[in-house]
Amino acid sequence: METTNSNSRRGFFSRSLKGAVFVGAGATFAGSLLEPLAAEAQSSDTALQAKIAQLGTVSLQTSQFALKKVSNAEIKTFAKFEAAEQETMVKILKDMGTTLPAPSPEGKALLSKLQSVSGAAFDKAFMQGQVETHQKLHTAVSSLNAAAKDAHVMHVTALALATITEYTERGQMLVSKLG
Image (cartoon, rainbow, N blue to C red; front, top):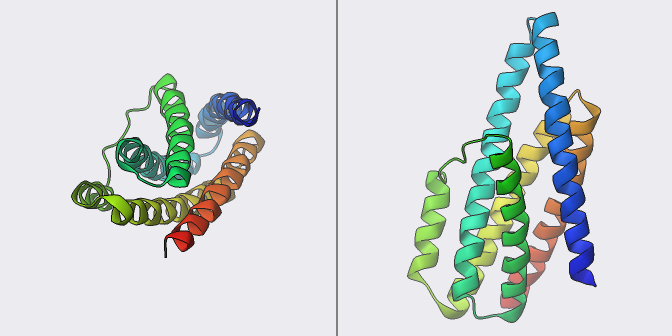
């Protein structure tokens, strides 16, 4: 039953994000015709969206890797849900025609670190990486929310912030359990 709720939440989030992007794109287009400053705002939003996609890519790649290597059952469940969430985001971004970015140098370093450790050390490094990535996601999505002028974008980013906060707090709890 919990999976159904998660899938329903993810489905709602997916549909909402697609709608917000459609409405946001239309608003951005109309704004660029009406207001010369819209181009500057759009480039700022584009940079934030690229940062969010880059962080999401790292989270997806590390979660998929963790599903093969993690030893702790709770952390494996976390990785499973995070991978599913990020796979949904990848699908949305691809549907929008977005080219997914390569991981940042920090993301590549995290992936490299995860490849070099195993057992409890892997579990802790993975969860610390997830917490740090989600904290950065929170900052980027908060900035996008604050800059948004479209109600749909504000609503979707607010929903995303709730999920990011949930994953960050759960990640912090798991890190503290690992010692």
